[in-house]
Amino acid sequence: MPHQQGIKVIAQNRKAYHDYFVDEKYECGIALFGTEVKSIRLGKVNLKESWAQIRKSEVWVEGMHISPYEQGNIFNRDPLRARKLLLHRNEIRKLDGLVMRQGYTLIPLELYFRAGRVKVQLGLCKGKQLHDKRDSLAKRDSDREIRRALREKQK
Image (cartoon, rainbow, N blue to C red; front, side, top):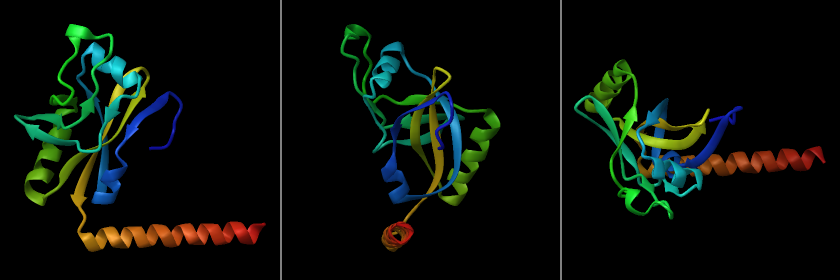
């Protein structure tokens, strides 16, 4: 996501781009408690092993680790609890159809603040095979070499 005015990126799931082809991206809100938001502001969140699933026409993110807030005492929640994502009903229906019929997976790609609210960038992804991962790495390395050669030529 390009850095726009009013957007502060908290966490990114770079591993998702290595393991999946990202076809579409959706911005959605997330239902959190106050101590979780304070912990997110401190950057204590991990998206690496997280995924989303649709249950009873609601989207839930699983495996997102938000560390307990140090001053939260009894108000802290379970760091790995399922959290509800907020999307429009027609978007949920579309995603449900794609996940059920075409084998897509919903992966949180990024967590950020937009105008003071926590947002999640949800990716509609298909898994990569091992040879696809190797191709991606080879392409990235060749692009890096080309950029390096161009920089050297410009000097």
